[in-house]
Image 1: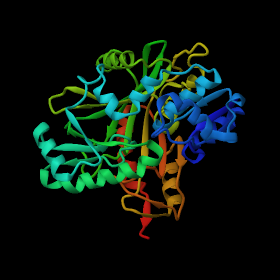
Image 2: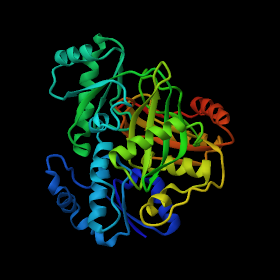
Image 3: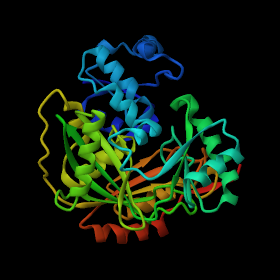
Image 4: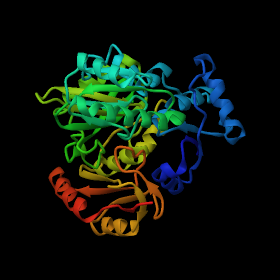
Length: 401
């Protein structure tokens, strides 16, 4: 099978391995931005940006694991004659401002305001104090991977945080398009995720993740550890109902999804985002689903809307995902020691995205991972115990420029 993947091969190491094992031929291309292009010309613009690099008639499937290329992928799928998702649904789910204001979503999200990038700091602070209560969280509307997400506890901290978030908005503009700054009230509760697929209008939740240690925004919102287990329909009824309302409301069908939720201090559940893609650049959902249930996320995605899909589990286990980032900005060093330590702890899969000598940013400015390791565990309790060991024994070292 020939697959056109919108993105970079170096960000999709797991999918490259998957294709090599099955004799698939992936072609990676980065399409041009749609910023400033009128909607009626989107498809033509995307096709033109590919040029001779990728003739879509040569591909059996067209996918992307990046939020910023989901609309591009569906435009190309439609041009190729493949089943395509609703463009309005994809546009909504990949733009935080559109998502939070949608009629099917707005009562499920935390109270927030949106600030255009040109808003002066003093004016921005006045708007925040009039509408919200501190602490608040600032984030780019075009962001991902928790890049630029900053917690502000007091008005005195606001100026510096706003400047930092605007900087990240600028860094992401070329690949993600223009953005705004979203300011929302901080939710002081546990953050969790659900992964699954929408098949013919029905939500099929497959994985439930707890983000550990609890993400508080001090010092950042970078997601380090994730303890995963198969989704329990009875215990997860509240998540299922919320997801069904959202996906039906926005019109998402025959798609993978990664949904993030957070509880407030009183135990009420709020949705943070619902992304119409396989999580973690494809690697997270694929490896965690395989470990926990025996299912093949990539294979399911390739069949959606074209062939029958089944979700019969062959195993039932827990898993730990650990995402390594640098503690300080600098050049990576001794990465082989980190890889060896993960192997010694029995890692099922290790994906190394950066090598010694490469410069990386520490949270909250990082937009890439250095290394990700996946571990199979007998239970969630075992995964939590392993998380403590990994944190102590496996670190990413850097040296300053």
